[in-house]
Image (cartoon, rainbow, N blue to C red; front, side, top):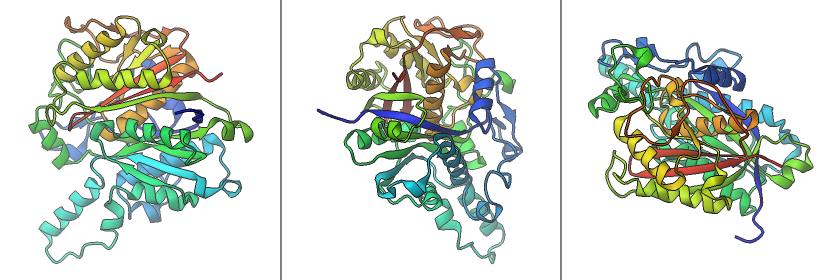
Length: 408
């Protein structure tokens, strides 16, 4: 598109098992601190460990009078949004709120609230269902609560492409800004899937690691990996037209330069065996960014720690990029937080550019011999990074790729 607006990132907000601040997340990521723990919410299940967010919310994070009325995934989104807005130094009293948008990803909506309410209803048939259940559990209510918090009246959208949702939300926000539909868009995703029902379902699919040592369960690209470790959290970025950001004197982290999406149309849970859909999304992102494969120094892979995903993704990366980029998966630290993964990993990709560091793959001891890309082993990799590609894959054949580039 001729004369499309350049899109930059002026604020970051995050909450994950690795911490409730950018600083804590980056420190745990670069040190390779594995966040897997046994969780009392999963007591009695075959898989009773995850990467949890402990002690949330405090009254400083979310107002207690609101917290009990909204699901955990909305609490995460609201907290991350507040953090991102503060980081971007946005003053909504000076902004045209009709020109501010919200695009969030989510896949399971308020399953925590729904499951607990059903359990109470089942055990106590006369127990009244709270009037807060529907507005507290609907998927779009994370968007709604953020809009209420800041008085945002521009486009407010929910994206549901499974584990690609966060990346697709950022990609759609990029397009909205390029097309001059908004000046600013809060984009990202949130997920709170750690319930007995959801964990049991993923375990039945054979997707979760059953490693008897939880601290070694999430090990992307490792020869002995057996599945992913489920986690929770949210990541939200403030995306902004470059001219708008510079006019208000904002500090800019990086530019969002490329986005590609595709569908395998192959299987509801497994990626295409030849990775054709993922290759397409990566090639689209390169074309959108007007970059060549050699321009990408690092890749934050989807890297779930499942046998099929890691092999398929690494083969697709090799076909497009060869051995040139250094490939990491941050899920060795944080586990897999489903729809929120792409947004959280987008933030990690931006921090890689800012700090010129590719975080190591935590948990990786012995590389799967079938994986022939350049994997970031358990050491800090310092190099000049101008562009990072981040991949997200989701059930239903979804693929999304984002490229972030140094701002200059």
